[in-house]
Image 1 (cartoon, helix red, strand yellow):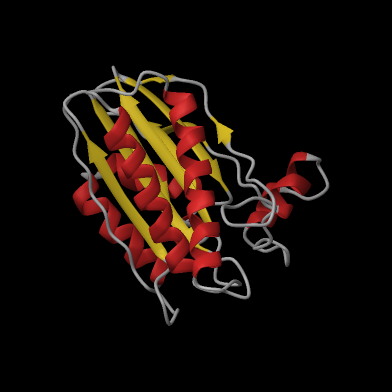
Image 2 (image 1 turned 135 degrees about the vertical axis):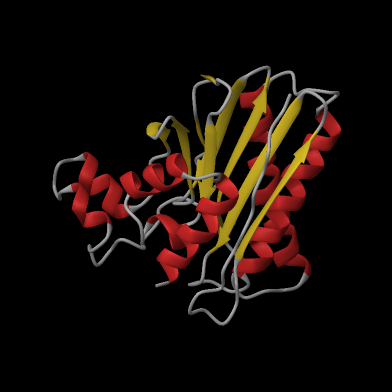
Length: 227
């Protein structure tokens, strides 16, 4: 399997960068993970880091050289990360449990499967078109789905940062799984936090990634988002 990965993160106007991202691979499988620690809670960057560790550890255990049940793996991995965050919180006697959003994608045998909790997103792109995008687990997204506010409210609604699903909360996360997606050579998978998608509209993300190589497009998108 041939692939290329480009990763970049900017702290923006925050004191702490709570985003974490990484990838693992074998001869036949590729795992992509992005987690965005929630700033309204203590140590979001710890929750994001623990998530990457837990998911990649399970991948290394099960990818021999590929994962036999992708959907089950993703569900197990995100639940393991949730439990690891709670273990950390108890071990350090924290007054509140750190929390994070997450999106993870497993690619093998020309097929991609992904899972997410919260508002970190995955975009599947081909030829400048968005074939699929995760739906945010947010209050504003539920209002849009019910037809109570227009899609443009994603960028302006006062409750746009309120999430109803994440890792590390008191209740178990609701892990949303995709259907298997058949990939073609040249397809792109973009995993990003709200630091990118909330600043640039979907059609601009797709256009920029179709007009340039990933190595050139991603830094320019981040500069535009920061601006």
